Image 1: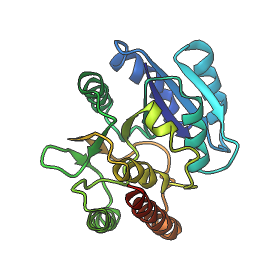
Image 2 (image 1 turned 180 degrees about the vertical axis):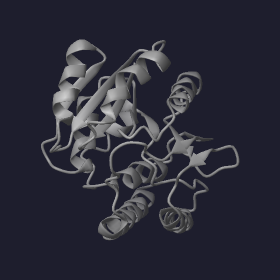
Image 3 (image 1 turned 45 degrees about the vertical axis):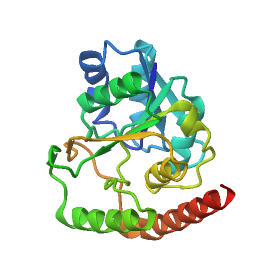
Amino acid sequence: MISILIPIRNEYENLDEIESIFKENFYEIKHEVILINDFSTDDSIIKADEISKRNKNFTVLNNLKKGLGGAINLGIENANGKYICIMMADFSDDINDLKKYYNLMEENNYDAVFGSRFTTNSIVSGYPTKKLLLNRIFNIIVKLIFLNRYNDYTNAFKIYKSEVVKSFLPLISESFNIFLELPLKVISRKYNIKVIPINWRSRKKGHAKFKIHELRSKYLFTLIYCFIEKVLLNKKK
């Protein structure tokens, strides 16, 4: 079974489609979808509860520590699947790529599969130009520091063996920087990973929660923390 973690904060409009997306496109794979309510101020929790009551594949958790970091930690702690994948509630990620992730994990016994939105075979639609430029610069910096060829560290949409990601708990990042912390911990420990091209599209409903000016220092902190951790792990060896 695979556990799909979806943090939600004020995503009422996007929850309209969530049941049909999994019912129509993911029915052949045993799965649980864990919706983690991150202190929504709209009616997201009401709709999420309604979904979980009529669909046994859905579970709702209420975050105890505000922020994506708290939501993801809580979701990982409560996940029951052999694999854990994080998706965003705006459905910018492709459900067909999720199936590719799952099949690769089952067939090859990888510890993780990382998607990249920035390869020849990826299709990206509606990515803001300024955000794209900053993304590319930061990912190049991370590549150079960690001496790794992967080029999409900050993307949330990846899949991990449950036992691997649970061994990292508690994750220290409080916001979107948790999506940098997770792959860097995997890479530093030299787990067996596969990188594949994935597709991405900009959200159609609701408002983006990502605010680069509020997150720069947090990303820098996570990068430094994970680099120090890598150095210490190498010394132990």
